[in-house]
Amino acid sequence: MINLTRLFPVLAIVVSVVAVNFPQLLSNMGSAIVPLLGLVMFGMGITLLPADFMRVFRRPAIVLVGVSLQFILMPLIAWLISKSMDLPTIIMAGLVVVGACPGGTASNVICYLARGDVALSITLTTCSTIAAVLLTPLLTWLYIGQSVDVPVLAMIKDIMLVVICPVLLGVLCNRFAGQFFNRLKTIFPLVSMLTIILIIGIIMALNHEQLNRYVLPVAIAVILHNLLGFLCGYSIPAALGYDRQTCRTLAIEVGMQNSGLGVALASKYFSPVAGLPGALFSIWHNISGATLAALWAGKQEPLSKHA
Image (tube, rainbow, N blue to C red; front, side, top):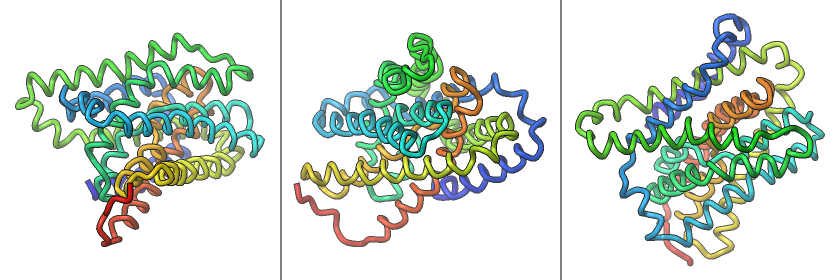
């Protein structure tokens, strides 16, 4: 897991550079983004069992806090950053879509590295993914529906098809054919990483002509979005009295988005340019998440509760 986490941003940057300089290699693959994301979500599903969905009933309060912070803070922060930086409407749309997405599967790996509560991390990712069916389209409409047309029903349908259905199929495969899929489980993290990198490359290739104009403001907005997510995701639970391990877990869940979903939705329903925030977020949040995990893992003091 550590090697994959370290390799991801490096490979993503290399593929991005190649895609920008040789866009013809990937620019005709725009229609593949949605099915590629479905493959990633299936990979998430085969790591889960029905019992994982029942964990929410064991710790309902903290799960509610985590999911609420995820969907309240991140789209709001995205909108505030976009307004304060006077970003173009289409870039704001992409950033808000990323903010309105559920937690990313990479957050579970980062949580493990940061000595967080991995079971809670998996529960929060699972719950926010389910909630995203309705909340992602509705929050996108709430924040940018006055500026651009937001096809809420079509987005709901797409999230069902490319997120929920592949995850549920993966869960069923794991439940009833777990032995058969054991070998796949060991390679799917690599498959998922390479798939997300390919999606990033496609978006970069599609936007190669606009990158000089947009890449710096989008990069600044993405970094601010992610870091503020980490900060608020930690400080608010801490103010509520939760222990340090739980605060670390929530910070990672709130700050790390399913940016692959953000890329797929933004590029399909708005424009390839709108997928740029999600593509840069995919690269950056793995760098920042791994850095944060290294800092936290290096602290040897016990994770005593002060709740």
